[in-house]
Length: 69
Image (tube, rainbow, N blue to C red; front, side, top):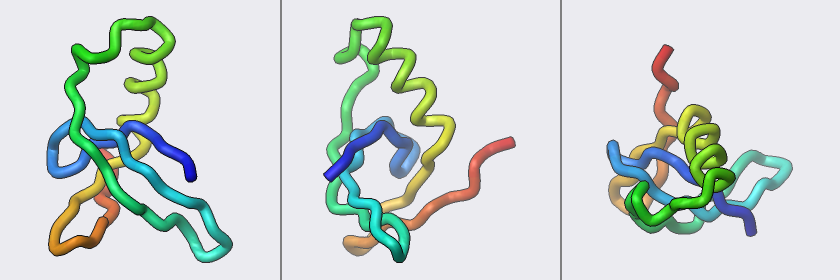
């Protein structure tokens, strides 16, 4: 299982997922605050990840959103 930072329902979150041949299976997420991460490497990874992934979570299902241009 892997994890990444993402924007879920317009909030910063850590999302846990598996990559399979059929795509990505999202398992769960937890909302976090940016202030929890103080290390420069963590902040760099956070900024990099949130530019790649935007999701909505509704009725126990994750849906990918188009990235802003």
